[in-house]
Length: 398
Image 1: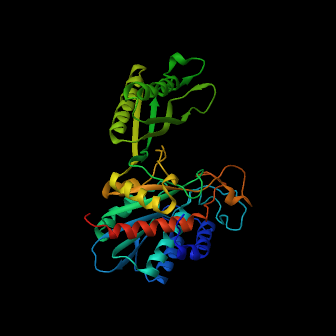
Image 2: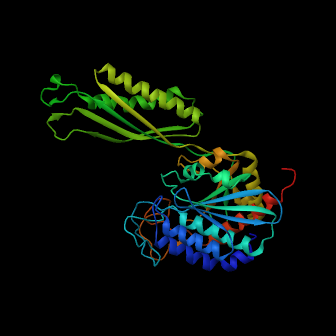
Image 3: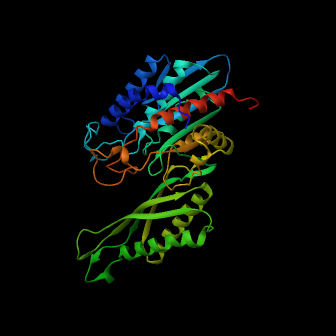
């Protein structure tokens, strides 16, 4: 493993910043303190900053030499609305808020790279350090783009990275094409007619109608889309009634849809609408159908994914750069990849041994109350960012 010696030497100080961020988590669009920490460090290192993009976002602008070439490196900053069970010294000090996805670590790895590049300035071009708010459901990437991210900071490509628990430290993963799914939510209200439970013939019971819808939706997956196209429909909530002896007026279904392509998403949404409306009509019910598209699929560009793989291979060796198996989780970096070429990659976070002291019950998986980012990733992630930026800016014939 070829780690940057300067980043390795500075890693303990960056880890202290990471643990401070972990102890003070902030939810989407509330990352004021986090943004202050990031802005202060970038300023200390002589990196000009722009604040307020996407409400609480920070962009560091590091220019060197005369080249007009530019690259964007992105890290997310927000935490999750959940309670931490870890008991180590840097555990969350704010009830109901926790860095359970490692965004504190993503911020730290990018800060490590920013410090190193500012210290050495051995590149020709511009590196934009994008510290993004509100990845966890707020669409912070979309908001930064709407505020002019790519117009104010013109970059040829943009890259992102996420830690992934379970893999061995020293491993990366990257692949072209879809790597994370679209995230979408639906809400369906079946409206019948209430009645006494002993006299259901006097009303129109919406509950069995809703149950038929749930079964019907699964035929969309098994019979309407191509078997090789991925798609998931999950009805996760059913709400109806308030008394055991009353047929309710309505029954509400809610859940999510995940796909790797917009074409499959279009198909699923239309078929769900048809199934819901027609089943309701068959039982003389009314149906309100709402379908909200949240994050689009995260689709890596082939050339940029290969470029990232080449950089990783030089650092850790080809055997430690794995294919990136697509996951049905979602990521708002998808918006950036819709606007610019780039790639979203994974860096292995280990199997949890790093939090052997003072952690709660349960595995060290993402969105888990026992999760903690592995600080051993800081030198490796920082090295990757530095090498990626320098090699991108040094390319010829692009």
